[in-house]
Length: 339
Ligand code: AMP
Ligand code: MG
Image (tube, rainbow, N blue to C red; front, side):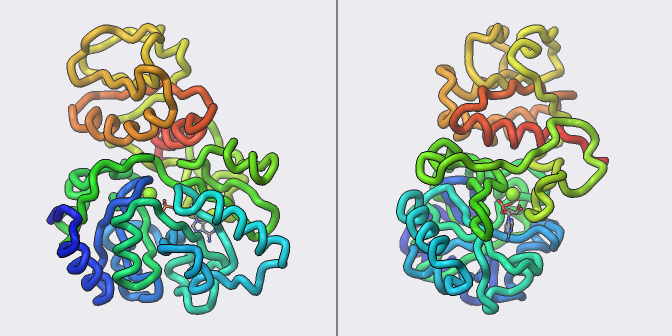
């Protein structure tokens, strides 16, 4: 059931987490399905509810930098790297950035898919941070959707996919960033494992040029893991997928499409020759082409198009600046077919 987030519902949700029951809660990226990070039985329920394969590690959410040492083995980091982690944390946390760092033995294998590292993030959303503080101090949470499907950016999206499997969905309004966190590997030299809500340029302003793991642009996803992302096991080629087949186009191709009544159109911005009013089957992510606004609208627009029973959705790729990189990453995976 959906509960508006307030003092009382937060207390109830925190008690549920402490008792080992998963709870869905708002973050600024997407809604999360949380469980106490140190409780393997609670973590197992997340995988069950989502239908998520156990090789896909979770992001552990904490409420502040002062508790980083509860999940991360800070001693295992070289002193220079430790300082760099602190600088990054101070610059970008709370925020849509996840760091991959050496884990402490107290973090169960189920949270990390048996890896020696753990992914950690401090969310901005006050409801998320308060829930973490009131419950188990560290809350492991993937997105609150069935595995491989569209991410939820509103409480109703969670209810649609998981409502029958979950007692508590805290409603904290629409997710402001609307796209999952940027994942930065800090175990060796800094490296982006997944583009996300923190634009690469902002990280590079602090850290210098960063390599990004390559992803196949299209094609059959015969292999489970894309080459180059072997050490980030959850990054599947096909993911974030609507039920309706999705096709990704550049702006030129999109402008040249013949419009059909039974197909849907997702434009990044206006002015690329989109047809006039097509009822619900046309979405424009940002009139002005602002990638932050577009990211915030992306999943809600896909949810709407996916509910119309169309035979196909055509999506326009974003210019790769700012959050365009993360938007295109999600659209490429949404377009990828299962083998
Ligand atoms: P999400 O699906 O948004 O919960 O994000 C989790 C993703 O973060 C996983 O699918 C992995 O790709 C990545 N990730 C989590 N933990 C690790 C880790 N220890 N090492 C590398 N990547 C990780
Ligand atoms: Mg997810």
